Length: 92
Image 1 (cartoon, rainbow, N blue to C red):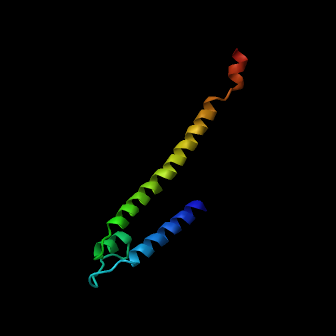
Image 2: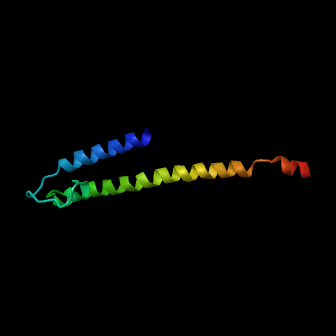
Image 3: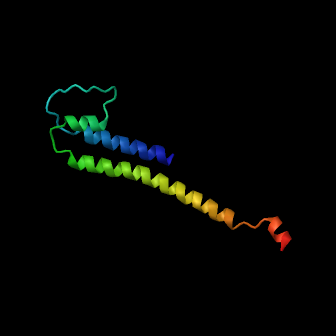
């Protein structure tokens, strides 16, 4: 649910920011989907802030799940390494 909510919020922010740009002319878009990077290229206004924010959001959307997965696996590995099996206690 969290990932769906965050992705929906990210998509809505991109749509709102992209549609607020001014466009120089009625340029044709050679894509089936009107993606934000394509619309940014058609914009006449300064889009550098939007591009930087979009770049930071993409990095965070990659690093946050990756760090959660790596943390989870390291905790599982630490728990497994600290387990005592009955075979080892029987031999002592």
